[in-house]
Length: 272
Image: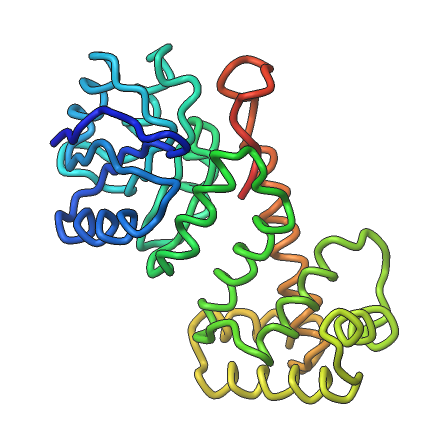
């Protein structure tokens, strides 16, 4: 299904490839409210995407679901690599599942970013905007990765969870041994403009909430805590999860590989 090809000034043209027609409709409805995006092609099959590009379509970006009716995103990305006309295309892949090996493979095949469903439409188009601008930096990628992990424990970012996100960001990005109160809690308190006690209380509340929800992911983490820290504390939670996220970020960066244009300024970005 192809829409009109005329591009209003200042708009990024976007293709959507998604097996669900309902999701295509929702994406289209939201995009029509945005002044800087226009969806100029919607597809349920990868072959139709390839055909449109081969016939001369020049979208700026592609929102690509992991599964299409005739192939998956891995096959489509692999075939796009052989299509010179697609070398500039920014590709944001969406999926309802979380599989690290699949993420790494998608990045190695040229995907620029990966988002897990359910996502907020505002966040998806914000990330797409930054991709098109070439300004999706590592800090935002890390925040998204941390939010994704927090969802695995059954919680969504809020005030207390915001303290946890900030603490994990510091655990991942500071490349030296950290003292929990002096180097982590105090930094979070300064960034959030609250007291050290508020951060400590918020982190403890969040950990209690995670323990009560008791997801399989938390049980796995608790098993690691018993082996290394004897019991689950906020410090143990931050240390173990921070190390896991740090390792994942390193793997995603390594999977990024060379840019789409062979080294030019407009090539693909590394990320996770």
